[in-house]
View 1 (cartoon, rainbow, N blue to C red):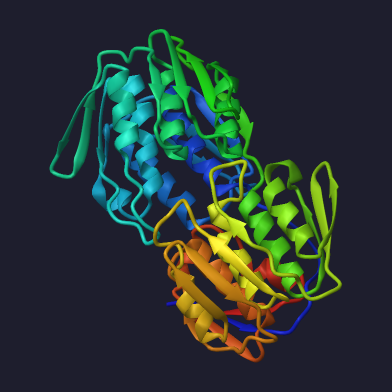
View 2: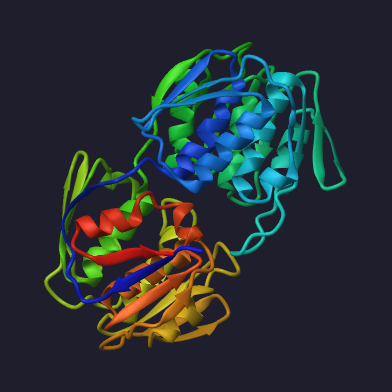
Length: 417
């Protein structure tokens, strides 16, 4: 099993290019199921979750052609199976996103329930309720969602909890429904907007994406298109926090500041100087970071996917901070591992009290989920001595070439077997 070995103490300097967003790419790959024509996607990140998704789509019967320029051609002219099996779904919860497109286009779909997740339960009941409101007949049998509908019908759907994948699934399903569908209390994340832009390029009629009310007027068929996947705002935020923690100076290329305003605001509060251009962000930090309190909430508030990284920053910051997690119930699993590095953290319920310490010390730690693993990398960059991070397959799910990119910025990091 691969591990990452990191020698702390180097200030990050230089520039790197940010990859395409995993959380945008996963639903957009599933959008290829909505048309018999070719959907070409550019700026696809090379990640474990992406290859898992492509394997699933290939299993269903989609033709997948990857090239060496981070692009993929998808064609779902003839699907062999209208089923997503547990063996493939269990490794990645986003697999539920095939449900809406297959049902909308073929009138029937059978998708395994996703199963457990390290950071807490993420139920799919809102996906099911929404499809039922659109006229689908749904049964849960032997661990599978079995959905049928001659043709989905437009409906007004209010989601009592903001759900990103729920919004995406229902938006895709509604593109081929009969009549208009209105999604209320919809997720406003940039990745939802990016999916909408791809669907519009394919001929869908969508208004309001990026707001909490999205209106989709169904069409008979969608056609092929070419779409460039947005830059990964969480990868962007992770490297910015790393530079701030190491009192470094970096420039990140191919990314957009307007997708992570809440993160940039907190970095400025911590003492970072940030310059923004149309497709790049530069950060310079000339002092020890100031402690910053954060509270996660749905977009445009502070993202849950950046909570662990800011906890790492607060561990070595000047002062005391509170980190409050409102999205997932088990998202403090990195705390124990950070304590092994010498962090001073107390957890009470969904809030962590973090007292900044003068230094962290290298140790062997274990990654528990994707963002927790990223936070351990950041902590290791400033720890004295060497830190070894085990179970880094979590990192490979969401960060493309992480050791190469950090090495480009001057970090002493290597993968060991």
